[in-house]
Image (cartoon, rainbow, N blue to C red):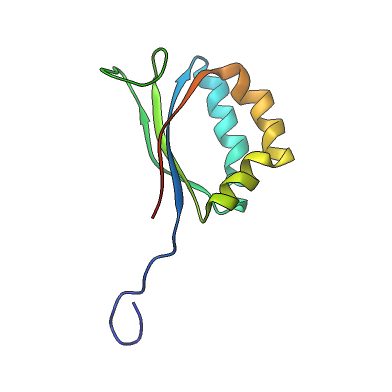
Length: 110
């Protein structure tokens, strides 16, 4: 709140809703542990994070078992994070062998 008692507008954020098919839960957990400090350094974070037991309908070409939001201060911060050399090394080591499907379900700026 400002000194006058009114709420200040929150900063704009770029958010993506993603679905994954995680085949190796242990390796995916290693990925999350290794990438989270890099994510935070780029101003990113996870919002909702769901381990899905049953999917009734999906735009993915096959099953999904993990759904989450990932948000950044801007689209540019998102793009810098996913192009970061340290992140790409972590992704190659842990994510690529653990995840067989990635589906962008939605994205928005608010």
